[in-house]
Length: 200
Ligand code: ADP
Ligand code: MG
Image 1: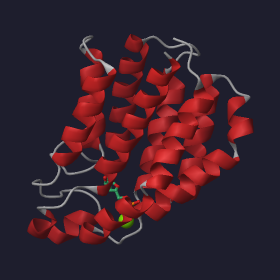
Image 2: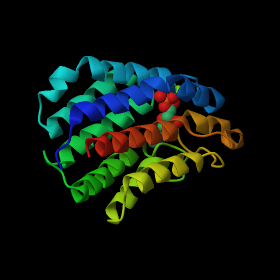
Image 3: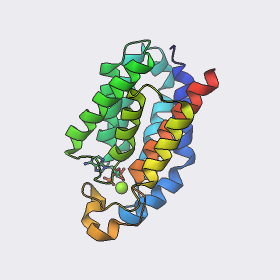
């Protein structure tokens, strides 16, 4: 498929920026109330660099996005989302198929796991990204099923106890709140589905 990267960037960045307060509110419950601000700052920087990003082939564009996120998001999530996008850039061909996307996302999720020394069920972004990668790989994914899964997996972090990141300092008190990074991952995945689907 040909990727309309400009549209996808607008969708993802717009979605994150529009939900920044919600993400920060989630982080205020089990973290330090900066996840929305961090992500908004990062994606505003990505939008500011859009012309430069769009001039590159998809792999290099994804690497550039990843580097901007590392530099601008900060916190724990900046290097992790940066790793995700940089790994996608390394793995994806310029015109990826769905199978390419599934394989690249799986590899990128492994890179995020390694970077953060985390595993699934630790109550992090990985609890959305991992299941979505797996779902894409099983060959029966639709835009609706991916959006639904991302939403459900973010919800499923609510009863989890945080094992990694700042929320883990709360121990049992992290239970009962959605993980902010799981929510931001679900927002990005939904935005990508919307952007790809709008292309027709
Ligand atoms: P910080 O925790 O440094 O304030 P953010 O608030 O921007 O950074 O991001 C917090 C999110 O980062 C968490 O909700 C979680 O999803 C994710 N996160 C934190 N540590 C890890 C990790 N080791 N592996 C994967 N994701 C993590
Ligand atoms: Mg935080």
